[in-house]
Length: 277
Ligand SMILES: NC(=O)c1ccc[n+]([C@@H]2O[C@H](COP(=O)([O-])OP(=O)(O)OC[C@H]3O[C@@H](n4cnc5c(N)ncnc54)[C@H](OP(=O)(O)O)[C@@H]3O)[C@@H](O)[C@H]2O)c1
Figure 1 (cartoon, rainbow, N blue to C red):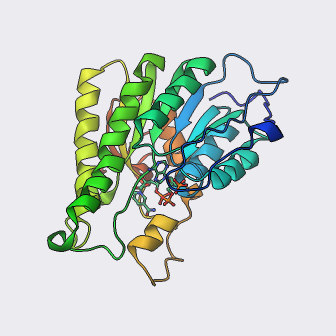
Figure 2: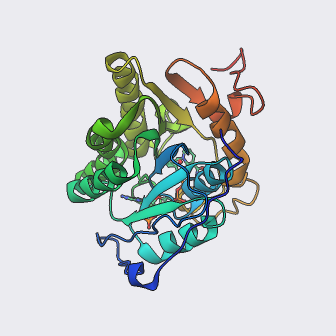
């Protein structure tokens, strides 16, 4: 990925109008500033980029020379993340919920102005109720909400951005080991990720020129992980930044579409470990 161009980001006061509610859809833009953002910088859309893995991956992409379009529901957190990235990249942010069709249309409008999208990372996700209930106790409406965020929204965002994807774009649909393992309490979330895995595989067949990966990042020390293990010390889980080199290598590698565990991807070569599941 290009890394020899330095681009900066300005955050005009007039643009600082984020909403800070779980349902807010106000758009906030951190526009390009002159002085470095050339036309050939690759463009990535990363959902759920205000904290956790999304924020760490956005940071890694920025350092590798990518321009970014980021979203999350809470504007203040997203703006803080964009400010942190500002020295390394030009960042456009849109505040909203990936389950909201209007918000997805806003993301599409943003990328229409910026040029083709080289990478879409469907990272935003919902765990569901915490503590994790057995399926017998999972409220159907809450189950439907998890499916809406984790399965339907990534495909719907792909649909919205398809006219704006570069012909050889990469899609990373962030999955989980819960898509494969059968563990008590993980049925709702796990089913949503298993469905995302399958949808990713079908998309790959339907769009052979694109590279479409479902990727399990492994356990990470994040708010979502803490919600999955309420009251437990998760200090032994790796920080999200530790998996970013593996994800960047996956994006850079010329691999066929597939499902991967991120840590099976060699960060130096992009080669997937031969004994990988
Ligand atoms: N952490 C782990 O151990 C682990 C393991 C396997 C897989 N994963 C997967 O890794 C990805 C990142 O997880 P994480 O642990 O980093 O989660 P996290 O710490 O909870 O962060 C989630 C991010 O997504 C945003 N978000 C959540 N719902 C959204 C929505 N409906 N629309 C837009 N943005 C939304 C959040 O901001 P707002 O709240 O402001 O919207 C936040 O920026 C997820 O796909 C998750 O399933 C995580």
